[in-house]
Image (cartoon, rainbow, N blue to C red; front, side):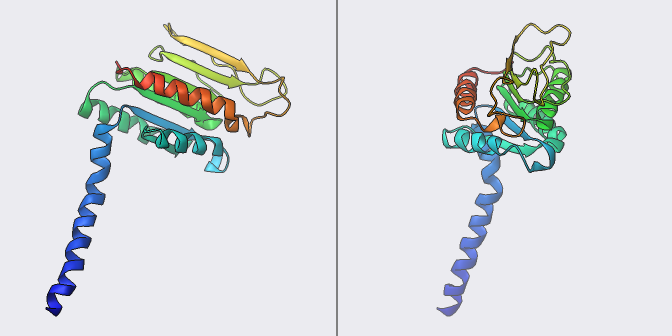
Length: 200
């Protein structure tokens, strides 16, 4: 009797570990797309992206919030998911150095012939031109008295690109532009809209 009592918790722990190991794979297969939010310098700032990520996950979207230095890992994961699950939408959201990194991911996906359905950049510091595989890009920047550059169309770009200037709003700057509730609502609504369609 005593041995059975001690054996049961061990079996339950083993079953729980199996669930933990295999759960992420099962969830990835059910996900409607690849959604990545990339923080800026040192993961210290860009907390607005954490809030967006929480809101997206609560609304049923599997969104990953990572540091900008992890962009290559995100790129490899998106490519692997394409090979495993087929065409699915890709959404990239970045702040500061994370905005620059989001464009790097898009450029890497272009080489793999994978389109980016929707890309959002907050106060990109040194952005490369937006590659032609991006379907829609929205950039929040500062034309003056701020720290954030406009985006430029790359060669062959035929998607939609909007540069929205926040330099006249004295309450918004480089370190809090990603925290604006109105922008959160816009980004979340557009993410849901783009995930309704399959990627290409």
